[in-house]
Image (cartoon, rainbow, N blue to C red):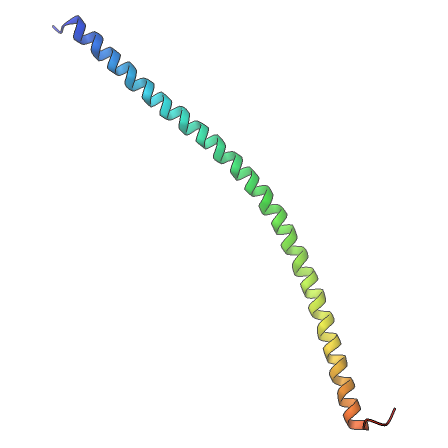
Length: 89
């Protein structure tokens, strides 16, 4: 049979190992909760960024369309000016 002192030492070592494993598990659980918080914040930022990108796309399309119309009108005015001559109204 084993010595009671050896059995006590084994149980103490098992208790230390259990404590270390529990500490690692607790640390991992804290890290997981922290990462979940980051995920929530990133999702909120992503939603706001998506909204900003959509508005920028709309404003970009509108200003691009306005510039295209302005350029076409200017080009047509220059053509008319060259066709009719600079002195004719």
